[in-house]
Figure 1 (tube, rainbow, N blue to C red):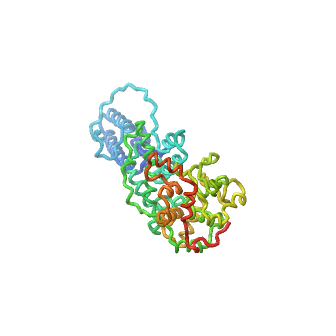
Figure 2: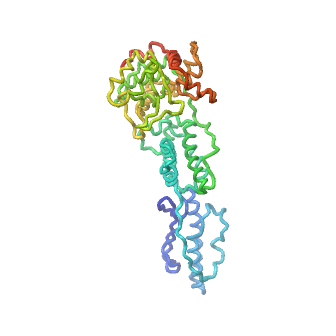
Figure 3: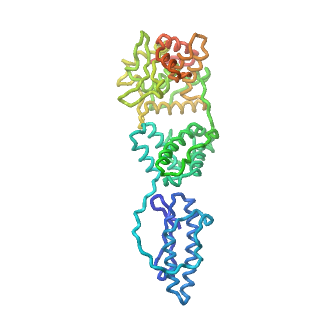
Length: 457
């Protein structure tokens, strides 16, 4: 019979009443030294066979002339049974079977055993080497916590020393079967139930990129464990991530933009005017959703006589652009000026340029808007390839196909992309691009009149 203490399985078997006095015990309790149920069952099966043989020998010993010596030998075997290392199957063990002759009783000098070292559990490794590390960034802690939490939900806590390629592969396969919306909605389902729901409803599942990110976080943790010789190898490396569904994001079409503009707004937590304003800024600037939602009033300034958005770190909140190139200046498009964006500095309360947005528990401003947008696009029938990030794709595509004399490096600078050629000269040149050239680039963005009709502040 299996029992669980903490995260470790144990084998428990009741001694038959007729043998209790002879064997001097009522039950047999042996640690199986594993946190995995399948492995525990294999080891328990082996112990059940051994104890059955012991009980049979004890019955025979009671009827033999040399009963006392035989029983003493069986008691020694029973004690040894509780301290022996357990293989996962009978084929793996090289130990003498129970039916072999019992050793003669001998006097053994008792030695003081050192205290048993507790195995390092996965949850403990996360806390020790990531969450409590002064060198790990907030993003690293958050992402690693998420990856470990998913593993714990799927398989439970276990010593890091026994988590190998089998479990890593099972985790990878499970991730590929989970719905892409996992974590974006409240759910009481287990991960297996979530995967089943995705299969039955034909839902989009996690992309290869998302699965890779989770596996890479665990791999980074295992690299530390391996360096400290707490594990013998890293089972999270060398996997392929091309087997999952892969959605290629693309630009908006004129028909899809018109469909979005005519759709009725549904969210009660995000004002419709806020949603329309954020999408308008995204379409005419190419800025990321996070960059728009974290704009502060001081981030709207006039530079060289040209109104500009400044995407820059905010020390007071700890927010910073995605990359070094993300710190940049984006001239305000004439359509945004026409819509009244410049008046936002005086029209809103608080430090932020755009009102109606809350900061999530994870410290992300605009996360609720992103979720509301995803629900809206699904409701109106937009394909999976269209996301909020598609505004950025659309701007990039328009600018690279524009007839105007726009240089590639101007586009990279405007969108916050790393330069294609990362030479020192190119890096210096990027920082020296004039505001007028950036304004010329931004003004090349245009849409049909039906795309953003009547959007005003």
